[in-house]
Length: 323
Image (cartoon, rainbow, N blue to C red; front, side, top):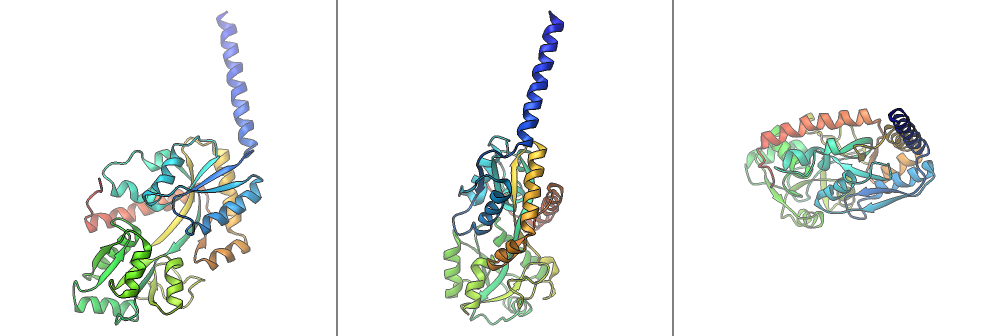
């Protein structure tokens, strides 16, 4: 009787494993949810990714704007979803790298509850100033700040945001004293730069470049490693003599940690393929984004490097952990 029971258990295990393997090889068979943590209008790159994944996977890929808490709502919903490949998060470094560094208590370790699938796209920060400020280059801005310590201000979107940390990084690397001014949202920050109530800010290209091209504000430098295709006339911070000011914001796909490897591999391959398409690269360039695509291991390497970079900066700045 015991031998028969053991045999039955082995048969059940074998059938369950076979069914699971079949489900993975058959993936996907239904709609995939792609969670994005920010409002409509900021999701253009994510919607291009969703469109291309739908074409290659043969099922609908629906973008859901799970807004709130700087994208952490989308991260939480992804982390606690079923690990079956049908809920995917388009998350950013603020959710994966900065959250554990900035908060005294978080509900989970992002890198234990979430698995990186593929980098999707990145964007640099654009250092912009009010058009009346007497500084036409980053070098001139630094000279202006040194001549009058504490007089200049930089606007940002809250302590610990990339817009804030980029300003703090400028203070450290250029050895200048400029005062940070926090804002609840980008519209108010842009209004005050236009009106001269703050002197400068690090902004995403989608917000900065239209105002630069219209002559309403002035761009001094991009924080990317090389000049961007969508702003070829804009020098980089390295060209201005500050290579250590290089910062970029990335977005990438994540799934719950227990998601089977074949599903992760399939999603990663499709994103890599899509991001290399000339039509996709053209569409991303038009909206001020840079398509990437990567393997899970390449993505993880980027995350580990950023943990070191931002961790060191946060310690240098002396930010108090957020409760």
